[in-house]
Length: 463
Ligand SMILES: Cc1ncc(COP(=O)(O)O)c(C=O)c1O
Image 1: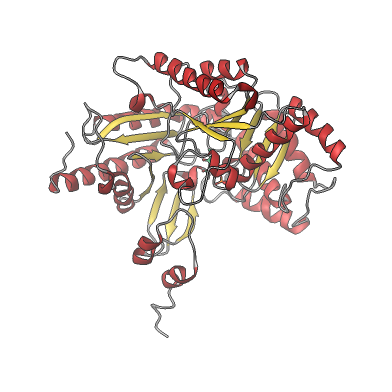
Image 2: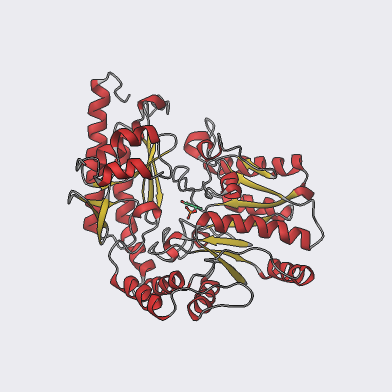
């Protein structure tokens, strides 16, 4: 048998169905196999080293070689590698993690329901919203409003919340009772002469109109990320959330804040809710909860919601939902250690001290001929690519400008992410240093230069 047919690449093409992958392209180009981690770097099977400019999938906050997390996982694996949380059972790591999360939560949360992924946590939020409204005798109040461009995961309910077409088209989604309101990207959707504040007023009015059109008695909840991540790194326009929250209060609509990317320091506070003054009824956390060393997520709920579902579980005999791995003790032990490291190393202080440099380098890319807008907060940034800065005309999607910049960055030792509507994102591990931030943006600048050269050669230069 030829060694080529037996290579990891050939075997991957033969047997592995990748998430979020074009299989036709995958069969042609094969996998990119990563074999090692070292701080903010990952190393592939050829020995090439890359800055992980997106912390994997916006998640590996402590980088890729934290010994304390490895040791915490190993110790729990040796002591009690698995136990469940059904029917009153639990483990010390889960008890302690729940306490810490509720203590640190943005706003007064009462309980946390553990899951394995952000999608499952948001799915559980949907179920709890519905269970809650049945419990309080409002079975007609079931609709959940999300936002176009919002990302909340890929399970059937979470993908319905996600406001991106490729997550829904051909999957027969969204399901019933999920609606989408406008995308608050001021640069793109602001009207001529409209101030950021006026745009925010219009976005909140549009949400209110949707609630009125549907009937407020049928609208149960609104879900939003503090900063929209996968939808393009959309930082909320000034006054947006204050105005949106006023609308939610007026119509008794619960606010689910999806902190899956923003939680645990990303925006310069422990939670994005603090950065943007959000008052959630329910909070979803995942990703940096364990620095992504093991899968764990949580759906937190307020006391008001807990009391209602508590009584309903009493009437029905059981709160009939939960996963085999809800509150897996090894994942919980690693999450606990992650939270301890955040505290002991003052990760928030570190983010605050380097964020101005990150944002300076990000915004400096605004001078590049291909860049129409840069947006960011804390250690998350988005770069909007355009053909014409003045008219904001974008390149024809068939030119795949953002995905090509992403591929060119690989040549320069940088992994970043292309997002919808020709933007690219940077969201490095929180442990990044000033010098490494310079390396990241130097490489991104080189990839943009290469792209501009290629477009110019094709007669598609930026205007
Ligand atoms: C804001 C947000 N919510 C939810 C999810 C889904 O999380 P998971 O991929 O762990 O299911 C993601 C994933 O990127 C996310 O960015």
